[in-house]
Length: 270
Image 1 (cartoon, rainbow, N blue to C red):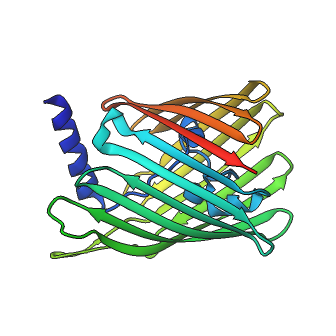
Image 2 (image 1 turned 120 degrees about the vertical axis):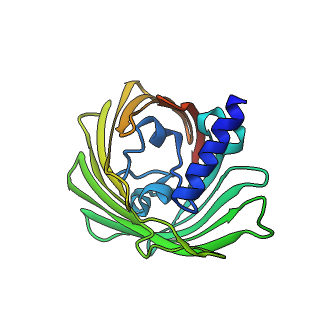
C-alpha cells in the first residue's frame, strides 16, 4: 500500500508541476549530483551539447535508473556522439516510466569548437507524454543549447538553457507549458586524480538549486564520486571503472523522504 501511495503521489507531482521533465542521464553525472554542465563526455547530449565538441572519437552509451526503486518510475536512455569534419553530431533518446505512463524525449544535436577556449552546441528536441486516458501520445518540439569556456588548462565553465521558448503540450483545457531550465557551473581538475565541480540550476518558478561533486581516482581506471544538492537535500555517491574502450559507472542518489535511486550506465568509444 505504501508503494502504491508513493507512486501515485509522484505521478501527481509530475503531472501537476509540468507535462514532461527534462531528465538527466549518465551514472557519472548522478554520482556528482548532476553538477556536470561544463563536462565533455558521452552524456553531454543530456547536460550541455557544447561538451560534445571535446570528443574526438565516436562515443555511445546506455543508461538505466530506477527512481526511488519504483519500477514504474524507471528511466532508460541512450546517447551517440559522432565526430565529423565540420563539428560533432549527437543523437539521444530517453524514456521515463513504463506501461500506460511514459515520457519520451528524442534529440538531435550539433556542436563545434569555436576557438581554442570556446565551444558551443545546440539540440532540437521532441518530447511526448502518454497517460492511460490518452489514446495517442501528445508531444511538442523545443530546443536547448549551451557554451563551454576553458580559460585555463584545468579550469572549465559551462552554461546551458533548455526550452527557452516555454513550449508545452496542448490539452483540452489549453496549453500546458513546460518550464525553462537554466544551468551555470564549472569544474577544476587539481591533478590527474582529483576533480571538483559546482553548479547552479534554476527551473522557471522554482527556487535556485546548488549542486557540487568530487571525483577521485585512487588508482588508474577507477573513479570514486560523491555529491550533494539541495533544497531538498539529496546526497549522491558512485564509482566508475574503465578498461580499454569500455567504461561502466554506477551511482546512488538518496532523498530523505523518498529513499534511494540507483543507476548504472555503460559507455563505449572507438
